[in-house]
Length: 265
Image (cartoon, rainbow, N blue to C red; front, side, top):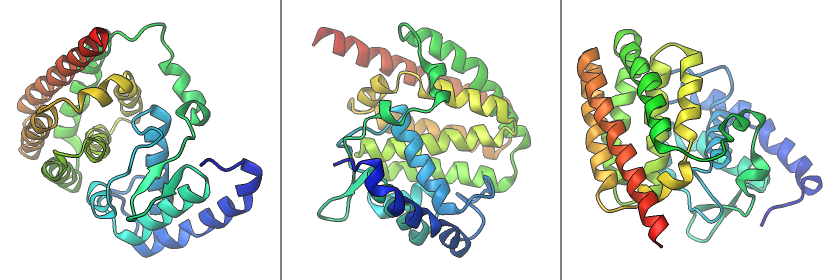
């Protein structure tokens, strides 16, 4: 259960005081590409927190296994365990029998940051969202094909291929999916566009969580990720944009399908 802030202040400080040491032990690269100067474990903790804030992870969701998370984040176990320990001490995660971590009843609304106020809209419009994504994301993928260093392209390719291991685990797939798309956004080399792309990605996550559990949806997404990654590796901007557009259309269509099912129930 969620701990009161007054009860966990000292525990939080103790947990995060060890993150710098964990980051130095793991090296300076996160996912093969330096994201910033913060320790690796802190970056992982912030990624998980971001998924909770956006609603991509919710109360009761079980996180993937440690092995799956090390694959998704491309890090070793020590910094991952430091991040999980810190989030547990903060009351965000619980360690359950069997070693799997579960999101507590700390709701996203209590974690939401001012930045997420941008997502407050009167009514979610899937067509408008994906129209906006087609403008921002397609430009980023062209920039990624043109600018991304080979290390970043290798990271994108690895995330795409590793997704095959998560085809039967929607929660694990959502974790590696956000890493895949973020890696492309970062590869574009434009921080403003990347931030905007992340806002657009986060819109309607409640609906897309359900869509990811429809039969065959993840399998198709994984296959499309691989095609996108292959075009990026070839630095073929046209092919990469075409493959990514097809992927966006798949995500849009399955989101609409999920919404229709919810309306009928």
